[in-house]
Length: 78
Figure 1: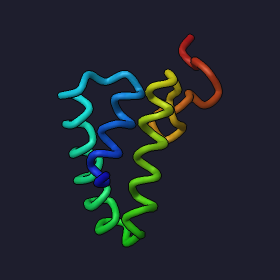
Figure 2: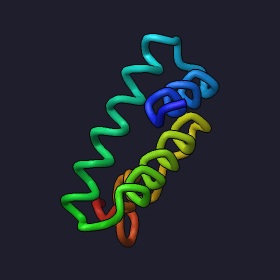
Figure 3: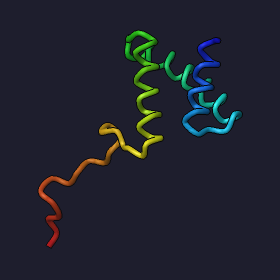
Figure 4: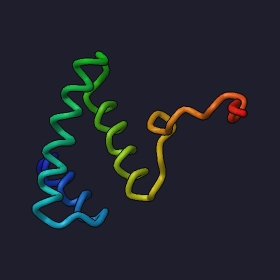
C-alpha cells in the first residue's frame, strides 16, 4: 500500500467521502513537502504535524496556533 493510499484510508476513517479523502491525502502530502522545505525539517515531521492538525480539527479542537489572541486585561472601553 502506498503512502497516498494509506493517507486516503486514514482520511476516510476520519469521515471523509472517498473522493474527498483522496483529495485530502494528496493535499497533505503536497503540503508536507512544502513545510519540510520551508522549515528545513524532515518530511515525516512535517507530515506528522499536519496529521495532528487534521485529527484535532476532526475532534473539534482548535490548536493553540490557530486560536485568536486573547484580549489583555479585558475590555478597557468604558
